[in-house]
Length: 340
Image (cartoon, rainbow, N blue to C red; front, side, top):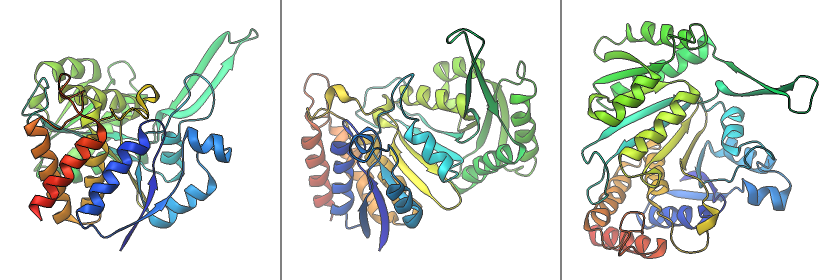
């Protein structure tokens, strides 16, 4: 029995995460779910967006499936995602971008992965107001450490080896940020020397953005620092149909948190409109992480079949004839049943 913290999230989170949980259970997975609130809902009811009880549950299980959590913009409490990454040292964020048959997208055959350093850089939360006037100037500090850069670069090359990937591309801005971004590039080049069987290249981030929208098939595994990796991973999701199709995992030495990477979309919460694919795929990443490969393969096969048929998918995939979250979930469950 694998024990997993279950974090429904906010907005559309409970509906899509509930769908993923239902599908995982129907596939016969050996999972015990342990409820663990986080986000705006937890803040309103427990006076904390990341309660001590939730931290304890995740630390105890070492695993979590998480729905999207609302983060206030410009004020209010800190991002729950950032807080979790720091609390559990989830130094690697893995974001696959795979195209699925039946999903309209720019590059139907695309299959690449962005690996993002998850705890350092400009997400170090060292921000200050400076000057004598009210909000006269804002100062933000970023920190990249050599151990942190070594950790993420080594993770990227090991990921490439484990998943039979051919190439790693390091993305940076070392032409301008010669020290801050230069450290990452230096470490990436050093690390590449230990993996001669993996092709290596580096790209300046602005050129990388252009190349991704022109010819993303030239890339395979992309590794970058926190801010650039955040932006690039959303860009690659756009190439395969949007954030609703993109899962994510946050990995540390002791904890793994698997999540939908999009927002909580409060404007459509409770309307049975949300696409559950992102968190379903995240659940599959969790299953493969704990070596439950057979049910993960069956879930992906069922999901692929529903997406390819295109008649029981949500409106973001089929705007004219899309169905609700519940109906799409039922269609996937039906395919699962047929395959059992």
